Length: 162
Ligand code: HEC
Image (cartoon, rainbow, N blue to C red; front, side):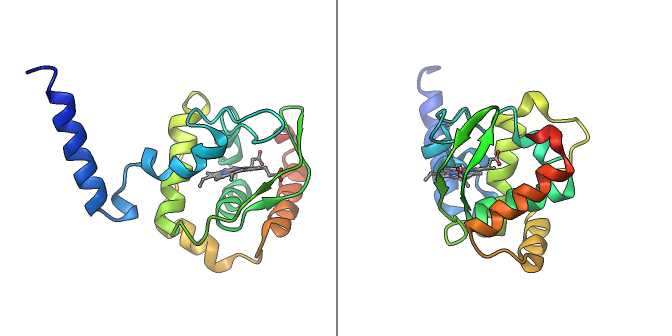
């Protein structure tokens, strides 16, 4: 009996997921695409895919950082960056055609609240679909190079994020 229960829960969960919209999907689900590169733990692969762990929570504390994070997911990121002392010269493909505003908020909330849980402040405000949609509507960036410029400005203002 007790052995069968997890299976039931699994079946029930996957049924709910398949019938629900992005907004209602559990955030782990929305992070699945990200995990293909950044890994489910968000630790990344040094030199190839930068870590999100020990990083995204601090980026998400400022409004500029929140805009940057939405921009990365929606429009991608292209160009040389350094994260925790390791250089990356990769390209993150834009995910805007796959994720709507609710999906972006779910994926980012998972990255901050689950993957970088150790570093998130208790009064941190999670992303909402409305906030993400507003950022997208006001955004001037269109591609990964533009997002890279946003990143540069962010680091100039918050050098601790280097
Ligand atoms: C196909 C691989 C791939 C996928 C899928 C992917 N990323 Fe990335 N991501 C990258 C690479 C590569 C970079 C670094 C790009 C560079 O070197 O300019 C990056 C950079 C980032 C950064 C910037 C980190 C920093 O320190 O500035 C964030 C945040 C991020 N990704 C979040 C996500 C999230 C959230 C998802 C899922 C919605 C996702 N990524 C999906 C490959 C990927």
